[in-house]
Image (cartoon, rainbow, N blue to C red; front, side, top):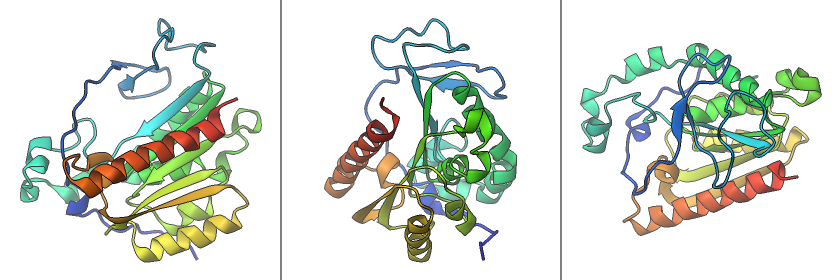
Length: 245
């Protein structure tokens, strides 16, 4: 029987390091989506119209960020390890699945209405959301295409067994070995359950690294740097396999 209460968030979801690089996207709005949207395009793409279908970019990827994304918490406190200054219970209430799921669905529907192919990737807090978009209950939408064509999930938080039982599109799991949120029991359940779903899945095990490493790892730490590189390459390969023509 599926579990209905997710494991509470822990401080492992708050650990982070800064990366080098300059964002290239812009903040805009999408029809039917209640929140501002950060949009980034590949090089040499026509970006003059973000509210209608564009033939130059027939594929879209919805990135559902982790707990530290887009001003959710005090980032300086997280970087300094001052976790006692961060109100995790308050975050859990404000960012509860029941609060954010309608918004996540709205994003996916907005993209599906504009793009031929749509993938979703979610890390930590975003993991449960990406799995929800893969659920069979949405397969009848958009002429049977569903909300997404494939998903990738990295060290998910707040997941329940039913999230894996509902998957009906190809799914990739990126799983660090040491993870308070994606426990060995949940990993085993996911691995066994996805084999029964009749959909392709890719399980990537990252030995010796912890929960946050794939998106908040320290590039100066050899093991974490290698995990970030491998995780990035695995994600790109997965989307190329399922989203390209």
